[in-house]
Length: 198
Image (cartoon, rainbow, N blue to C red):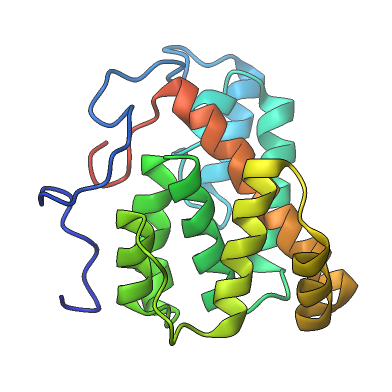
């Protein structure tokens, strides 16, 4: 597989995203009121450059859109986690929540940040992670998976994560996972299309 290319979603091992290809719900309102238009303009003129992904359904509630956008911008553009760790964690959350938009958006970003394609393929197919995967990435996957499955992380995982990233870094990682879980859940309900399809 070419490491610069995203996964082939038409293959026999394509990802199972339940909402992929279904009609979108909670699409942006057909006519925007003044606050919705102002919120849309802020996104268009900000680092995202458009209204897409979770901001399509969030456009129904501009105060929530603005708050979510600010948190996402802080995590992505002002965060202290390195790009590979950040993009990998987002991909883990997207896979665990079965969200097509964030997977398709962040898979190529993860590859560009240096995440091994074999690790992303393992995520996609729910296979064992490669044994030679960077231990920090393997630990981040464990943190995100435990958090999403059990709503907390175990003592051993916590101790390793605190040793790896310190308290501030661990808080950032937990917030990153929580933020992306939240937007994935919103989009799953809204059936927001992935960027490669919508």
